[in-house]
Length: 330
Image (cartoon, rainbow, N blue to C red):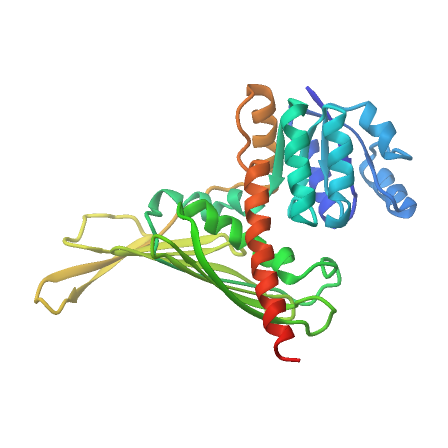
């Protein structure tokens, strides 16, 4: 059993606490939250110890789960790594690239595991279609949300778009050639809506849009590759693959249907539409289970600190491009 403590008991922290309680390999020692009212409420609701300070909790655990606002990630992670504790950090890894570099340096000497909470890697919509993804050349993603004050302390690129940046860097193994981006602040002092076009050296292109001032919620990604189109709905946990094939396959699966299409060269092809059966999993619980597995087996975490840095680096390139374009409008 690995003794674990949770730092931050807000909306997402409560979800982490619930998930950890269901994972047999963890022993939830307690949690710490800077807000005494929140701490009291969570202590009573979940019947777990609320520690009065972070240092006291740190001494009693093997693993620290950081689920606080991004601005405090670095402080908690640095102290935890220096104390030789395994660390799980919610996305984004930290506030700045300089902080990320320092954490990477500290982690190399700590001899412990560190995983970043890019949870969409564990979304069933992505897991079920990953084996179908083969060198996509055009990717389009829309991540839209209602306005919510939670998360508005950072630009929407760090709040929402960062999920799609991580998926993008996971499926495309090529250096970035160029980034073109625009965005505007609307309800906050930070960028509330953003669009980025990312071009890769292998010819792949991605168009990402994120907004936290939408009238509807959407978490969709579409991939176009040779002979196929893949659609992933991260919000509703739905996926489908549409392929061009030479022949109709005798498939009695209700999730598959096909129709003929006549191409210009008079060859008859078939469009085959397959709705993917998705596994019934809790993505947050799964990422915490995988983190525990990496600790117990001494293997590389699913989302490494290097992954977290690379995603943050691209996010800031997008933010800097947006800010540059905004400054030219003044």
